[in-house]
Image (tube, rainbow over all chains, first blue to last red; front, side, top):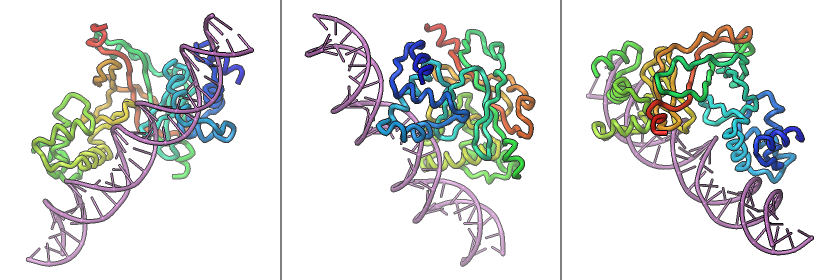
Length: 135
Length: 135
DNA sequence: AAAATATTTGTAATAATTACAATTTTCTTG
DNA sequence: CAAGAAAATTGTAATTATTACAAATATTTT
């Protein structure tokens, strides 16, 4: 918590309890939770926490590049505290999201003249080992 | 239209007027239209067309691999009749989607043992030449 | 032609997200 | 330290793409 608060300060974000709590939770979890999962997980120890604050905080963190927003077309967003360049695999069966630590490819050369590249997202779709065994 | 109807038949989909119209429109357009854009474009010549039919048709075509569903996290989906392996670039500024005809990379080797890869999506984010000139 | 099946239509429901105003907390400054 | 200003949080209401569903229409089969 202390480390997370300092991290926020270093990035020019006032480390309120709510912001620190949200980011600390996200950093400590290997899944890629949804807004609601984050909210539900924190609620017991933070009964006054508002869902809107979770939304606001995640937007703020995302805008400042401290958090990655992941969209797998599920109808809701997921969040990842690991902002290093890496890819994601989502399983058709169990819907779990796995980190693939390879960096996404360099794509600058694909672009037409005059285009400027800001980000690359490589998403892999398929079935994970566990789900493959079941079938 | 005739060609599109036959194409549907060949893929085991009954070529109703609505389905043929939707796919024919999508094939003739270089943009990557949203459901609503498709619906609005077809409405004048098909006044009885229902938005639900457009949704149903696009889902059917997508499930059968005749159409690609694109999600850029805009809050709505876009569709692409070109199912060949290629990538997409979306401009931060004008929100236009550009086809990048390079094939997405082979990613099988990235996956842990036992995982099965079904699809790869490479999305590029940035600003297009026109928007860069304005700034 | 009648019955069975498939498709389309329109309305109502769903659910994630956003807008916004009021309250509370934190910071600034006299 | 106290008062005022600024920022953050909260809760409710609105928004909006999508889905569910039942009734109506069209198509195919017998």
